[in-house]
Image (cartoon, rainbow, N blue to C red; front, side, top):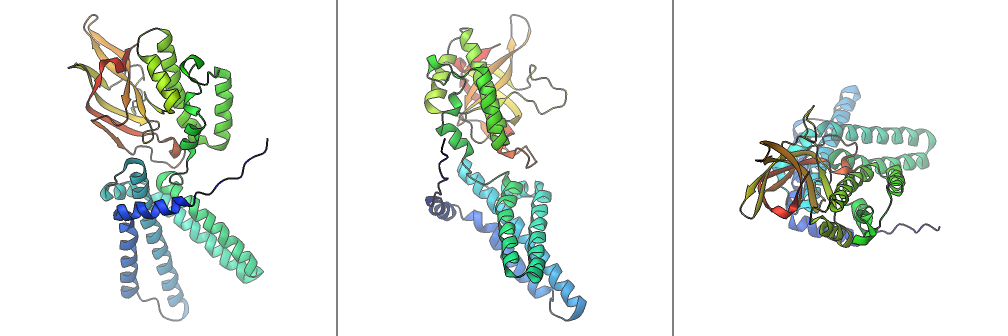
Length: 346
């Protein structure tokens, strides 16, 4: 099979300018960094001869580079939040950057080291060697900083491509307009996806787990699940998997998130962390505890909650760049009212 050439979306650059114009807070950190650099240059003398002058100049260059990298990381976090959620408070982005400061500064030091080596090679091997290593440093910069700040290139499109190719419907039975893949085929496909994008494989595996649970509930004849399966297949919806509790020793079959009867439905409250696909989900599937008056204890149930429901909030949780693209972050529900038909008792 002939592989098609990758396409460059030139309109993405135009959309980036529009995004910046509508959200000027993206540029706030880089502007503050530029002012700080001017102030440092006035306060710290870098002129002079001999070792003292060289040390001052080198130290100032390193400080400016670290400040620039940190400011760009904050800008990336703000831009990513705007792109995903439509809003981005600067103070929240600043706090997130502080929590990732180690990874950001490590990327900055690595970039500086590659540039330093490029300069040495240029002095020994000539201009071509220096140019080659400078290009390597640029490549390192393009990928290392986004990886440190937000876990990848913003808007890289992996989940969007997964949607376009019908991936969300992989385990939806054919009778509900899905792909109808067998479990063996699904495992093979996920292995192939994981060999190219581990984060995408983790995120979509959790989606498939939630879909498979819906398929089993549909087979049990509980009611509305078949309609959800058709909606997933027709609209390429993504389901998050909110079954983890984020507490050592807490079993997923004894959830802390609770659902209580309310007028015309249920009210769901609690926290799920980590919850896969936190930022890209269309529906959140989660385990909840429901009081059962008949037996006097809680029973577990599974709820499906639209991602745009009132009372749902998202926050960063996964504090490492490894598998950050799986979007395994925190989802908090505060008295989120849902129709009763979105809950299935287990």
